[in-house]
Amino acid sequence: MTAPLTLTEGGSLYGRIGPEALAALVTRFYARVAAHPDLAPLFPADLTHTAEKQLAFLTGFTGGPPLYHQRFGHPRLRARHLPFPITPARARAWLACMNAALRETPEIGEAEARELYAALSRVAAHMVNTPEEGEPNLDNS
Image (tube, rainbow, N blue to C red):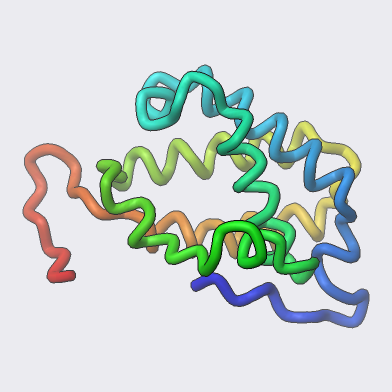
């Protein structure tokens, strides 16, 4: 689930977006997360380190240098997120914050934003580890 996005005719997604635009996206994204009533309680009050880790992850995920691997080891996304109750609603909220941040980052082209959002949608679905209240837990992992 953490393999970088595939290359297209225009190169890696990272090469098409660039490090500055990716950093701007992460900043806008975490400003939204910090204000979201369903997401903010899952995160530390100071999001500086969290944003640094997200930027490192997204850099490698989009085909750039493997910064996350170099600094923190393998992402093991699902395992690292298991301590946090990630419901389908929270995954949708996370994606909504990302979608809004993508729209607010004009340095990222529309095609690149769609590509990144589609890839992150798959990641968000993979992170769900808790059913909504009243739903049966069908996760056998």
